[in-house]
Length: 262
Ligand code: BJW
Ligand code: ZN
Image (cartoon, rainbow, N blue to C red; front, side, top):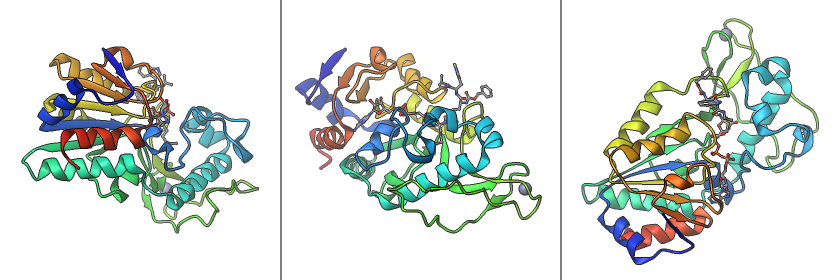
């Protein structure tokens, strides 16, 4: 394994030769846009809770207003921030490879839409979308107006979730909580993309949360090279061929440039 802070000749050659790239992104990829990761301390209404406490079905059933307001506030924060240079670089690289008969597939654990807003197509939203809503009991989809919070300031009071027009149960966000299954189609699509890739990039994820964290390991079966982009070592670092230590907003544009894509 090579641990680098900038791109060397070996890494540049690897990106230049790659025609079929699978990229897995996590919360760190959106951090430079101003979206907090799951390891950061929380503030306001939620300062006594970790993100891991709140992203569960149990939390929603025991404290629906607290959890609902957390999601609506995060939704409004995401709507107020912009994609960062990491998102733009991936979108450019995807377009560039597509123009040459190649492919760059993005599977994200993020529930935001920043890849799409940067112009990329996302193959798989492994943990769902914060913009979709459905009934927590009968599952019927619900259309809601955008939240009118200031996404940068936590609301003073929790707000009760709206009720399902069909069955009267609470509406919930369309995300995947701990203990829930991932959308099978998204997971299978991500696994297939990794199996057929000739290069896998894992960026901005701690590699703690399963089963998404096991996806990059599928590349090992075929000896496909793996690159990690993260300022910190992670659970996945030991499996990598290259660990690029630094923010994805700097290193993804550098990788795309080394590949010749920008
Ligand atoms: C930067 C940066 C910069 C900073 N540039 N990088 C053992 C085996 C298998 C499963 C389990 C197991 N033990 C427990 C489980 C179950 C559980 C699990 O994995 N728990 C772990 C805590 C151990 N998994 C599940 O429950 C999953 N479902 C499941 O397993 O189904 C089967 C089943 C069903 C029924 C019963 C039992 C099993 C579901 C997981 C769903 C995760 N959902 C969340 C919330 C989504 C909604 C929301 O947004 O609120 O998804 S949790 C949260 O973690 C979110 C993220 O997508 C996910 C991953 O986090 P991520 O992206 O890695 O972010 P962070 O914050 O952890 O790390 C940020 C990284 O960025 C860091 O490394 C930084 O260094 C880096 N960084 N700045 C680049 N500028
Ligand atoms: Zn319902």
